[in-house]
Every structure is written in structure tokens, then in C-alpha cells.
Image (cartoon, rainbow, N blue to C red):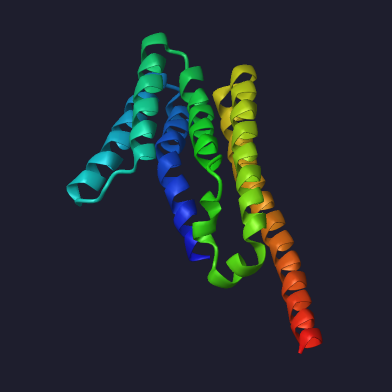
Length: 192
């Protein structure tokens, strides 16, 4: 649970600049103010990390470059589509990182590793697939809706899809893990 909360905090920290942009855009209907404030917040987040002497992850730097480049493109063109496409780039980067075999194993408790490490590897690829699907969905929705409709849809989808996959993974691994544990115990009793 601790790792899950840590991951959720990291995702929220990455999304705060985008959410701030959306809220400000909804309130002011000014793309200029919304993008400028979103960029300032993103820069402030990195600056705050550096001032506190904390390491800035590579994905945070990439996120800043994506925000700065797409935010600048939005400012120059006046088109919020560039900001709406940011999550697609982030999803692709995260999905690519999740293609590394066994990335999820470090988040597993010791006893789960003994029973379901193969499932953790498989679910790691399922998570990568969800990220790539989310990137494609965001790309399509961003091109065919308004900023506010996109924000509402993607905000709900992003949360619901991850909760659903987490619940499916947890339930599957728990059920299969228990089955395997009891099968090993039975085999040990039979052998004794």
C-alpha cells in the first residue's frame, strides 16, 4: 500500500501543472494565462526539488521539456491541443519504461515473490499496454473534443482505468497466490 500511495503521489505531482492549466483555462478562458501559469508551476516544482537538494528524476525532466515545448507551442499558436497532447507523450514514455521485464518485482512483498513473481512480470506488460492504449485514446479524444470535455473525460478515464487494472491485478494475484501456496503445503504434507 505504501508503494501504491507513493506512486499515486508521483503521478499527481506530474499532473498538477496540467490540472492547474485546465482549471485556470476553465475559469479565465485565456489560453495565454493558463499556459503561462502551468509552465510557471512546472518550473517551480523542479526548482523546489533542486532547492531542497532532492534528485530530479529523468521522467520529471522529460515532463518539464514536454510541458515547456507543448506549452510554448500552445502560446505561439493559441491552440490548446498541444497541451492536451502532453499526456499522450507521458503515457508513451511510461509505457516504454514498463516494457522492461520484471519492473514490477521491486514493488512486490517477499512472500508474493515466492508465489506469483511470474504474474507480476506478466502484469507489468499489461500495465505497459494500458499506458499505450491511454496514449492513443488521449490523442483521439484531444483532437475531437473541447478542452473542458477532454479534461473531464480523461480525468475520469485516467483514474478509473488504473483503479480497475489495479483491482484486477490484486484480485488475480491474491487468488492464484493462495491456490499455489495451498498446493505447495499439500505437496509437502503428502511428501512427509
